[in-house]
Image (cartoon, rainbow, N blue to C red):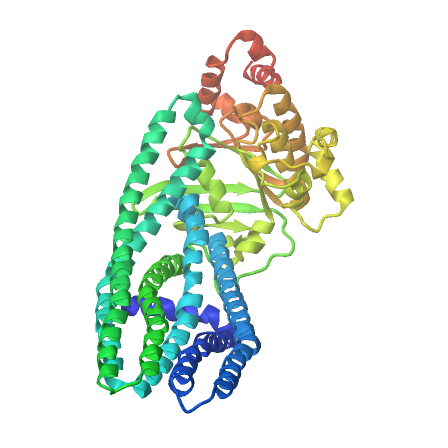
Length: 606
């Protein structure tokens, strides 16, 4: 184990340390479990040499000695051995599960703190693999490295003591294969660790691929790409199979060598010991006892050699786990960060610059002021920076230069949790979590009363359809809300925002993918939601910004125009061109006339 691996292993011990008492009990129980059976060869030797082959004893004396020895040994197994085995397994498993429970929770909490940039670069499947597969491999270290190792070392020590007392030359022959175990342990350690790390990485990549493709199954089927995706998965699986086969070969080589040594050693010992019995240098009982000790001797030695595999797997997993945990979040609270209690909703972008990659700015010198209760519309072509502004306001990223102020305070001086409590968002794709309708709405405020829940549902225009569901608010929504329509999901997210009651609201394309009827219901709900709040409306469809107090037109990361809807139309600039382009792309005149915002536009234009 190199220095880096040892550092991760000792760090993992920090999760195990609170359960040292359980581990000590497990080790004591394990020592008893493996040492009590070691008395059997001694009893066997005594019965052979002192009882059965002793012609001076009578039959009744022999029977009494046999009963005393076997009865005492049986009582020892019942009273000591059985409880020790139970305690060993109970305490070891409890300690390992508790340590892994704490490790997995810490890893998950760290993931929840990571910024958007981290999740953009790491697939969800890979992260799930870290949480499940890698943590499971780390759990094996508790049982194997921290309990079995001590039990096996004590067992080997006791056996060696017995062997030396019985016959030193025969004991030396029995231990002749031990150097091969040590050599093979060192030979395979680094190779197995490298292969195991590669296997886990490939498994994480496959998990990411599967998660992405399964989530996009409708796209795969719609474009008839099932065969392509199957071939892609087969290639990944083939690489994973080959890497697994390399590890299997190393493990098989380890087991083969262990098996050869384990089976050859008794033959050699019996041959050598038999010769010494013939030479009258040891008794038959001693030879039988030594032979009986070979199984218990090589069993711990074999487990100690297999510890190589457990350590390689576990340390490789710990390396990936702690590497992930050590990545600092890109957005963190500054020392002494403020906790906001009341927010008026004054938002200012002051000469804001931002770049995802160094040297490639996506926002340049952005200046926007939103007064409390105002609705600010952000419009522009795709890639102009609208959604980036929303991400910066929520501090999913920090600005590269300039600042964003909330009620005159730089948001970097405000704690992230406090800031986000006062900023709500309704996104283009309504994201629901597996669970009930009630749970999804209460996600906005878990402490809300039943009356508040009903009022939020009513204000979001979703009370009627929720009441018609089989179990009402207790109806399961399915994964990502798959049991509900897009309009129903969006209205639930609006109800969730109502319960949060933020001072600042972001609407990111909230109606862009809805049919006219759903759009009308959602638009009604959004009108209620935005009332009295500072609102940033991000939209491609300009119909959604007609009622905005101020319109900001973005082009290639800069503010190209600002003004009211009417002012921008009168200027005949970029905003006016965007509207005309949308009108030209409308399906037909009847469809266009059905839009009330179109009639308003024509009235203003005339």
